[in-house]
Image (cartoon, rainbow, N blue to C red; front, top):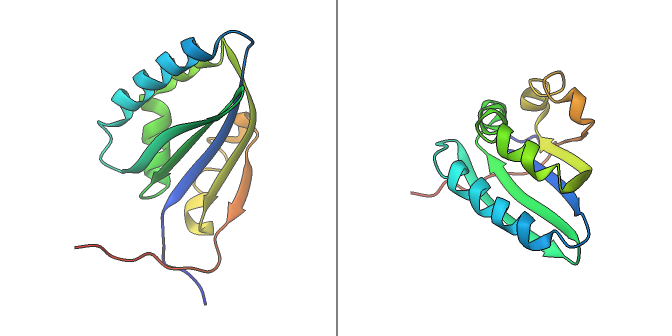
Length: 123
């Protein structure tokens, strides 16, 4: 069973520098406010486990991912001054992932290709 779901999710993990968690959380507030303006964003939020932060985020398609990264680029640069991107996964169907491989290559992501599944349509 193939999927028609075009949703792309970004799965980044950040290791926060010692003593910088509160500063990182302030940056998270700015990420959230900036991302709220994006029409293709399906969900967005941060979760924490000790000094590791994870951003849980999904977009309608690859274009939504690229719009997001452009939109928050300066905030991301600031976050990376007090954290390290220790893992980055991109999840989506091959048709959408193929649009992200070159633009995201410098971030060295792991690409996970969605092959089976569905998305419920909500009214």
